[in-house]
Length: 169
Image (cartoon, rainbow, N blue to C red):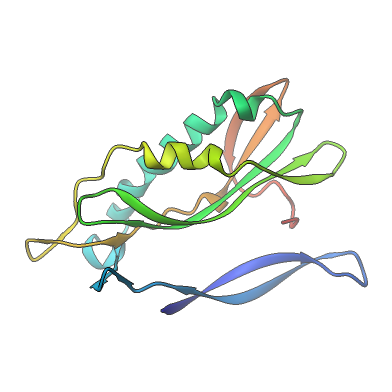
């Protein structure tokens, strides 16, 4: 396992104020005994964004049109997905999922069904397999859906880049 830094947002129980905290998050470095390469080890940025960008867009476009999601009242949804790993055949086989958090107009927060996202991930067409020296290898993508918020209004949804939760998590 290797670590990476991540920022989490918490509510201070004493003051009630939102605070941010940097934590260490462990990530798997092997899959079935094979090294998981970072996308930047195989494709230099910004070209690596061209690989993950269509995947992010596919997920977001499907989510904003999903009838289950559109049943909710006006509010903001934060999709907390990251750490996507693609196997040697180009299929997404692993991701970290903290779920979908929904912030209603009355400021109540609740979780939405996680299976909503999974159906789109498992049905995504395979990426072109990634290769290193002619050998297909597993790769961790730089997809980070935490960068987006889905806005619900009048049972229609759109997504925007940025965390509209204003420090709430």
